[in-house]
Length: 261
Image 1 (cartoon, one colour):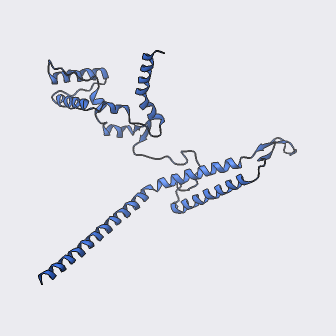
Image 2 (cartoon, helix red, strand yellow):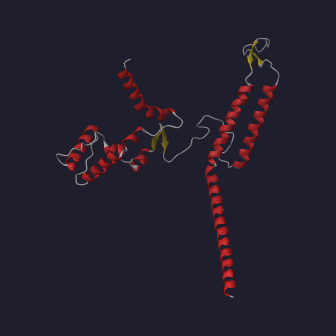
Image 3 (cartoon, helix red, strand yellow):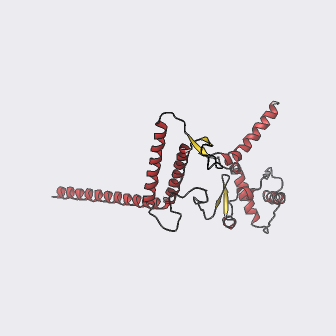
């Protein structure tokens, strides 16, 4: 591979990297369209919008036709003989904020490679294919604090049992499984490895997911309580500051009265 080809490949990879990482990275970079938000392009957009105010509204669906119309309008706006060259970029399509009404009509929007519905909804445990250990998705209301305490105790108990299994001496974790067609001959069967450790790990994972699911449902209540405590602390600070000012004012008056006597 020549140096020119290697450089072209590196440039292509760098250009496509943000879009690729936007679908694979946990902390994706901003969309590549941010490169178009330069002061020069924003000035061209302002000039285009000002110039289009005197033209009849158009609705070109074709990108090439829309770009041609934009170039003509900008060329007329800057006048003949100007050294400025209109950009080869669909300014209104790339730089104008999206229409909120269209997003609401579409029922969602794309963000970092994922589709977010409007209004935002979170899938239930049943939709995720997980057992509901919380019991909060049912019709009967339950105290979430008690459920969280139960899940925590379940997690600790399972972890303790798993730790006990790992601390036992090394032994074959095999169980005898009789053959299903040999009910009258129990000696026929196979030794299969026991899956109780794997089952406990799966149970711990399910418990943690249920715990997180329930905590996420309680975030609005937690936010309200945190806001209440924040406002109470702010009121207390203001009361303390006001009391300190009153005390200082009283001390100043006493000092003035002493001096005037």
